[in-house]
Amino acid sequence: MAIRRNRERLGVKRTSGNDDSKSSPRRESRRRLRQHLLEKLEPRQLLAAGPRLIGVQPNNSELLSNGDVRNVAPRELVFRFQEDQVIDASTLSAIRVTRSGHDGSFSVASAESDFGSNGQVAIRLTAKQIGENLSIAVSRANLGNGVLPTITRSGSAVSVVLNSNATTPTTAQQLVKALNESGASSPVLTARIAGGVATTVLGTINPNAYSPIAVNGTNDLNVPTGHISVGSAPKQNEVTLRFADNLPDDFYRVQIFGFDDAASGIVGLRNSFGDLLTPNDSRSRQESIDFRLDLGPQVVAVVPQPVYRVDGILIQQRDTVVVYFDNDKLLVENDATGKPTRRSAENVDFYQLILTKETVRNTDDVVFKPVSAKYNALANTVTLKFASDIDVLDGSGNASNTWRLRVGTRESMPIAPIASEASA
Image: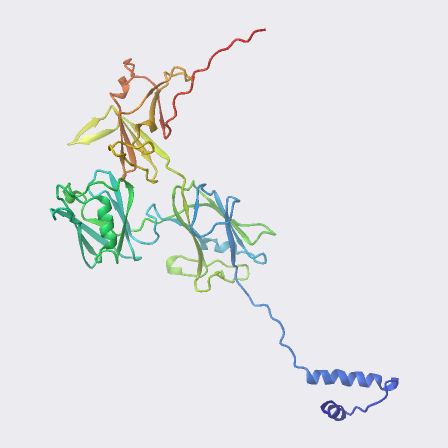
């Protein structure tokens, strides 16, 4: 009935289906009726959206994920965004790579000390809050048999009293445990063994030589960029970043900012329409990926017969070679008898001083091993002591010998080649 009334209002009369003369007005009336009864849909609009990160790929390998540990240092990183995006090359400074400076944390103050152990152990102290500076004052006292170190705090000043008891002096692992569990220091500070032997005894040396310990600076370093560019069409949604130098062992953070902050020198990443980066986490204004490089220790320098100044006098240690490693700490452990284990960095078998006799063949090489190898966890060096001065080590008295130092393997000398004449 409603349709009939509408037709009557429009002045349309019911006719037979064979009335061709009325077919055109009838079709027009139906069209008008549909327009009248049907609600119009809103026109579809395409909303503007900034670039969204799809993935970061190092060295054409697997995509980088937060918390990854990689054993191969990347030479480049490729950032991929949605396919319909064209990245504005003038905003590529929004991509930043930093490393922790070997303290394993970002934007927080840290410090490392051997607590008077002469490099036998290195203890890393790290503030828990960004921008917080601490001062660690160390003293020693005979607290009694089996008593752990005492810790107090007043504001940003932390006081540590090591037990100097002759029977049960404080060890490095006891100090770390006390700092991490104390109600005074644990809210503001964390401690860990960064290198060396955890059972190293502390508290036997006057703390004035290393106390107070200032935890008041971050070690974060910007990783220098060698080249960064937007891909050519049709890959204008890709950004390639190549590093200026080889990356060392460390913790790394990749950041892509989606905001502008002139005071901090931050420019947000934009597309060609000026739309800012759209982070995958709606609660954040940037993308952030942390990863770690674990490449193994590397030798960075070797100093034969080093010279030291003692009481203003220069003294050369002619029987000594000092091997400097990068900041990757070495493993040091002893067996039940107190001797270095087979895998310890203080195992003398890992260091071979080879007299080459200035020939290219190895059949005349002579190998000398040090009598001791002493690891300094704070400086990350190994000091090698030989049986006598190196220039007379072979007993020939020839001071112009050529030596080669092999580090890191226990391999023996290759077997000399045997000449074999074949019969005709």
